[in-house]
Length: 418
Image (cartoon, rainbow, N blue to C red; front, side, top):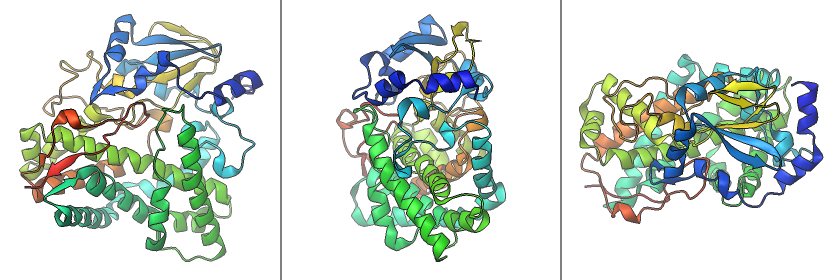
């Protein structure tokens, strides 16, 4: 980071002002809202002004929104023009380690490469293939649980959350005795109705839990084989408990709530598309993959990418962004770009639209993207085959979706098994 940008980030007036926000300003709320699964009209209307529009100012700092696919991809990939380290703006770093914000999404080089290098070897194709049996087991256990609670169940609770939570716990090597306590810390991590205070407060619980787990494993190796025990064994000499615990928390953060939303909202979409539901039951691997990829585009639960700060003056999508301006990429908007899709608001797995930005792009692309795809393929195929006549057990108008959140979700999804 340049010294001048570092100086801007340390501006006490701006830092304290943003940290004290109790409510997201109305003028910038719409990128975090949806009408069911569709973007709110205001997001789509913003396209009439271009792929990049100025949302306004936040305590004197200009705030930009990017909705075009090509421009979004360009911004996400440009770590020379844009910095991800916004910690100086939205969080005090003089707090206890577990209370600080950070992770891969809010670090720049060389710190980002140093931390990401720890995780990358655990997400190779060979390592991921070793997890398939664990994923199968977790999915089958969730389906059995649905069967036991039928004939009508809440799919969010018994499947949407159960599957990714089980997979993440197995991946981390979380002891079964600790899992219930761990789960209690995982709620409300993406709710922005109070301007994000809930995110940071609840994040402290999971992060401290994992920091303590790393510290315990360092003192007395005892955990099942998993990411935590391997990181301590392989990198314990070079990274402290806070860093390894933070990386573990990032895996939990990126792989739990987002996958839970994808499974629940994805099932809701599929129950309205009999052809795609049938493809999951008896289609080819290629057909299943096309359904999953289109779900990632259409549902795209992560609504916005981590904000970027312009390192210097730069032109994007015809807009002149000044040094220090904040740029927010709407992943929802990028996935619904009419320049790439004839009917962007329609779910259609027959269309050719490779290159989803649901996992981000460039240096900060989600390290667990392929694991998430494995999980979605396995879980949705198994669900469709176990319960081929699955149907919604309420009127769609009764469903309640996130009001204002980084990760869009449905609160409950009552389904009838047969």
